[in-house]
Length: 441
Ligand code: GLU
Image (cartoon, rainbow, N blue to C red):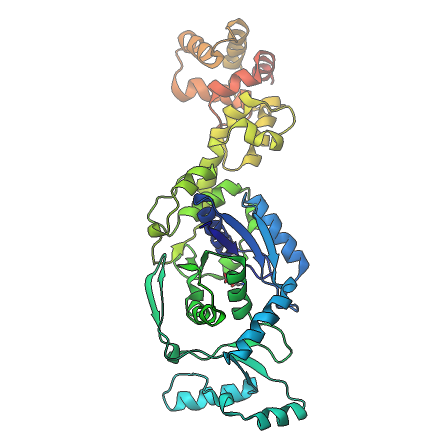
């Protein structure tokens, strides 16, 4: 069996971190099993779906390195839905109903008053052919409900949640088609999953009860259902479902300098029994991917944790990976010198400016000491380790040590009192620039 997963966003907005996590898990599971991962654009809602969001979804997946192996669009599959729907009509598994939203609301209020659950009472099933004809003559179009089989047990072995059971009679027959002929999410999704040969549906646990309903749809369509993995939802750092999560997406991550590798490394592991680690390469994350390691408790997404992980990822990125994003002229030696100091890659440009100069002159520094340092800088061997050569000689000559020895030099040479190891930085500043900076007053 070739594994096929799908990520099925509705293009009614940008992907947020929760969607991205679901996409990632679909992608990883497919990759871990030599399978395929497809993007399915759930755009049956023509009014709310927008082309710009379809483009943005593709671009976001690309940025994250999760380019799909194929793409399908529900808006192009109407003929298929019609055909399957006609079969369900013929089998009596969908039926016409006419209640307005207000009527349904009233029914639910009455049920609540009697302490009953808000279940659709199937009143429409009692309508006769004559009733339908009369309503049609009055110009009232029906919507369609899927008729659940109350006697069939519903259950599945969820890859994350384990054994799941539902009673069909505790659920309302879901509306699958509106009076204007448009489709609601539920049925086209089941038809597509069957028709596309999706083997594993990986989605949030907010879809668990949909799965119960869709299992009966698969059955009514005469197809074997896929396996399901419903993941616990994402919460903010404070442990609550936060509004902010809904607005955090690729645009924000890019803006604050987060690398796609950091997003992947974090979202691959939160909510699982595996530790979050700065793993930039997708392969080891994929190799260890296993639904059995996912917990039932909500996964916590913490932006501060992402920022920290990002810094550790940046420290590990090699020159070839980042070369095209570095300032012109910055080479491998410069990158290797500064990367342990970066929180985000863009800061490399700040260090490049320090290397290239000019750097601000600090008039407070001890001029005599710096003159001495400049003289030493003219004498040492720059091919080896000039920083140790220079500070060793100055220590001997002046008796200075620790901060008194190092800090004036760092300040004069970089214009700053913190930063990358001087051992790495000084050879990049080079002899001539170093002497000029030590002598600048
Ligand atoms: N379009 C649905 C959603 O975004 C897809 C759910 C599913 O994965 O089946 O919620």
